[in-house]
Image: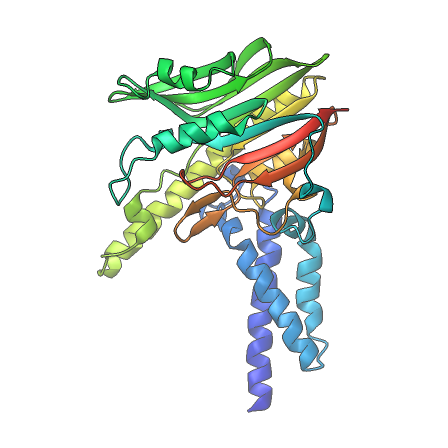
Length: 360
């Protein structure tokens, strides 16, 4: 019986190791080049990495050499593991530092104009947080203004009066709310550009800002969402096998389409970044995790600041059971990051990110 148990565990171990290696391999491939069912397997990466670590511990305790299979899988996946989970945060990230300049990136969720499940509207507290952050530059995704007070564009600019310069791109209007993306700055904006990406409701903008004696290019982006509805996320109230199969197929299709579009959008942004010699900061909501093809494109040419100063998973999106790191700061060689943190302010479904930096 003992040999059967070991054989069963070893079989499961080999399957888990194989899946982890496969996910690691698929993560560097364009979603359009793989079957749709594999385009979003990266969301299971952390789970299979942890499972393989448990197999390693199991076989070491049992004094069996079988641990080598998971060790190989972990070794081949270490690049993705290092981007997914940061084990040690530098002490400098917890010290008070006033050197250089600060930038904040925040997905506002349209100020949550509409009440949540408790009937609460949190728009005022979100706007207050932005106004009080006192960052030198603020990049906002899902930025909105209303036709009615207190969230007209005039009201918002009044609350952010200490940011005299702005770059705002509006994408569409939903009832009485205009929606888009915005960058606010205490420093003079020299040039504004909208980066062409294939999207209707998402955008990327490049803002050249004169900070000190240097022009810094700040790219604020919000990439394609998966467009999952509350019904998709909950998967509740479905009893018939045919209905369950239909919903799963719908979710699979949405995740595949979303990942494919984000890959195309990321290619355009990275191309725009690499064709410039300016010190550059790329920030925003990429709607993709560190094991995605989208992330690989950015991290190949730029430095993910969280991997330098973060700790743990660094989740930036929080919606009940759904916890992911999908918001980022990337920099090129012209920018030297000093500190970075994920703020616990939780009025939106994203946490704000803040970075301190100076020019190289």
